[in-house]
Image 1 (tube, one colour):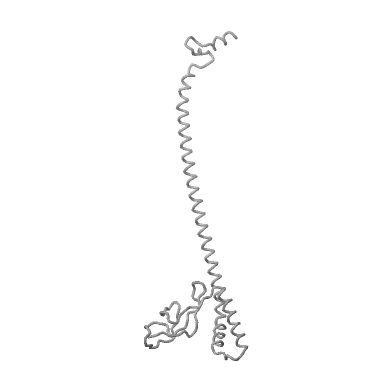
Image 2 (tube, rainbow, N blue to C red; image 1 turned 90 degrees about the vertical axis):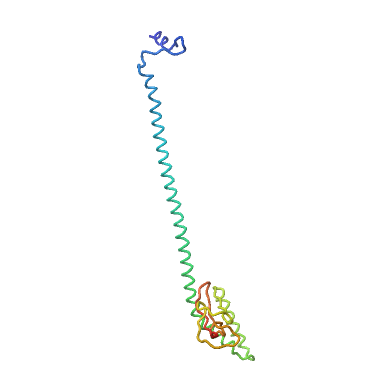
Length: 191
């Protein structure tokens, strides 16, 4: 039997091994059929790869959209928080404005020879600096064109040499906190 195996493994005269009796007759046909089968498997794998890449692109797009939505949400919340803070600060500052007005009137009509008047002026300047540190700005009105967004007219008066609609005098100062008017300036306007 060993001689038979040796004979089977020896090549024929053309360099091809002889067919063994143990191999089925259709072995060559199976090898030919494996190529199309591998081709079908390759096509199936390429199809699966394309589907996976499409799904990955879809997931990536959804992820990027979610990130953008979250960033927009965070900006909106931060903006709302800043607006709420500014509104709260504006409400508090608005309550101090009558005190500031009274102190400015007192300083404007103070007698020059009383030393305590200097102390009142110092207190008024400290209060102004504290409010300015919070973002309070006085609205400049005198000599400006009347703007209903910043000014509140209490009267219109004829004025020679002054263009109509110009603010003649400020009766009560107006203030802004950031870009928001918390109290318009009360003014007299030229006719």
